[in-house]
Image (cartoon, rainbow, N blue to C red; front, side, top):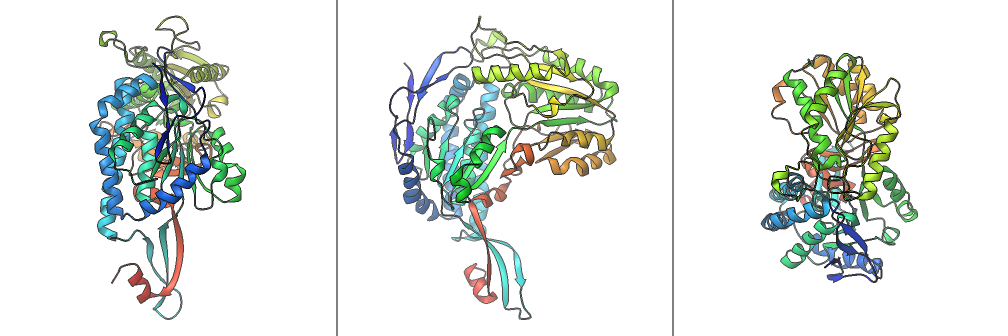
Length: 523
């Protein structure tokens, strides 16, 4: 029987009216659930968050908010096996990919619980954060200025992408809750089953303050048109959708804070000192293979472009193809003896987009391995499968710097080997979330950092001493900012305490130093 995903709004479950949009198992095309928000009053949803959630979270100290995050992390960990099963069914994830999503959510909640506990110890019952030291404004040392961050008494509407229904949702929730801002979460409908179940667990736990969290399963309707000057919109998804959302009349009129994290043309650049077969060569191959196949390449941080010195591009492509030959594409829920190591992309629409993108890239590139056609490991026309595909760009190719294929694919680009050229090619992506430079040549690495850094939200320098310790660049860490300039959306999330600042107002206070110290609890 098909599950009806009700929205959790105004403290109750609302199934919506009429037929709902179907949610599928992308490996079998079986319908798992349906969802709609037809008939739900978005004005009432927003009013509930303002009336109940804003004061309820505002009344909690940083330490109490941290405890809430810790409780949620424990709740999801207790129900982890069920959540992993749902991720496999609705997301087409292998068990490893399901862990990446679910454990990412749990880990980020736990990390922000720890940050919040430290804030609580530092601030006591206060929830205002001083930014820097006192600034003497006149000859008198008593008259000073101080920048102060305080919670904005508004609502966070968080629109999440289809690829990480757990991690993508709760990394945003963790930061907003610690800042004291209630959340209205809108997951991508196609993969909302996991988020819905996690919301069920939260609602049943009794841990949530009234109005702190609401879930919309289906269209957001006119919700964004109702946002005001103290509200926030955090969006993860395509650049085109992000640009459309932030151009909304109400958001512009009311100066609503908007954070966009869009997909990007992330890259890995191999330095000229990296010899074929060396440890660094193998580390680069391993990194590219992981990013291509983990979550079937459906990560905003996945490597899409690989820069290789031109005299080694053939060898690198051959070695990468050999590695990918061992990848077994199929239904992640198939019997273990089938040895499936990569599942389908999330939807039929994604499959069509990936294949169309590959064909566009192939107009200026040669196929090294993989296919420009759909795979059918489960039978004709069933499932959303795509082969791991590697292309090699021809001289002068431009599409590779303009078009992201959001699936198990990358394109190799030959270059002269110089740091300036590598940096220029990295920058042609017009803004990326993360890229990687692989080398033991410190001068070359410095040139890449200096030249490409402004185009990147995060840059990993992979050298021999850390090659076996470094995390894959696709791993988003709560302690470091996640976001990027230009095409990547121009936003920032996470970054430890930095993440809270999106939900806080920085006010310059001019006052008697003695008075200010008393207000800030410094006496």
